[in-house]
Image (cartoon, rainbow, N blue to C red):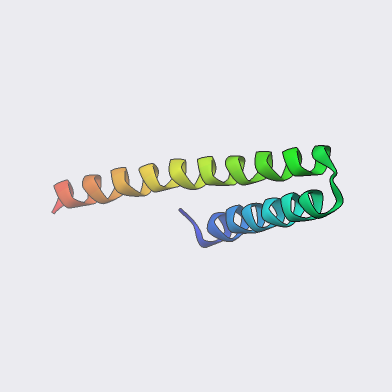
Length: 64
């Protein structure tokens, strides 16, 4: 996973947490749901990138 991807995914996760918190504080259910959705999307992307990284590590280990 490239550093840019990591930063972008983390920013999306943090943004989602902020949206959810603001939604919780104001009682805005739409904003709460949007925050949860953003967090889940970011975590899914991070998991996918972790799998790619692990596969690359395995592939690199076999080449040695």
